[in-house]
Length: 127
Image 1 (spheres, rainbow, N blue to C red):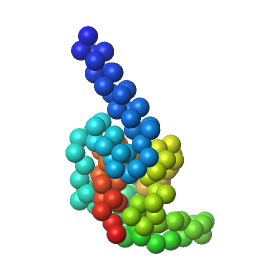
Image 2: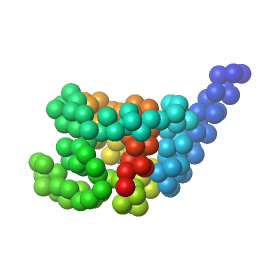
Image 3: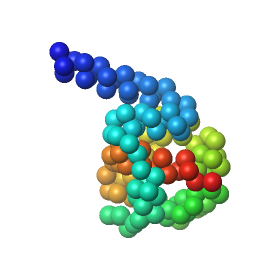
Image 4: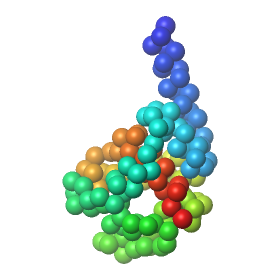
């Protein structure tokens, strides 16, 4: 019975996250799964080089508030901060797609939910 109740709560949180349309709603969904986020940890994860010798800042700059260019492809990357680019973190499917791709590039694995929460909580503060 307890397992069913926990499964129901987890699925409800995932369903709520899937409907999220704002960065704050996405963050609440991540925090429901992982615990309280930390903007400090998020910033550290963002600017630190990891296993594949990349950091998030390699493409998005340390302060991601303006257009940048991908260092390999030269493709323009719109600002990552949702305060500068309101389209960011407004589509949960896109958010998951890009977290999966970029975390693999930077960390050599998918991000943990806590890491997503931490990075997003920091990005929400960047102006």
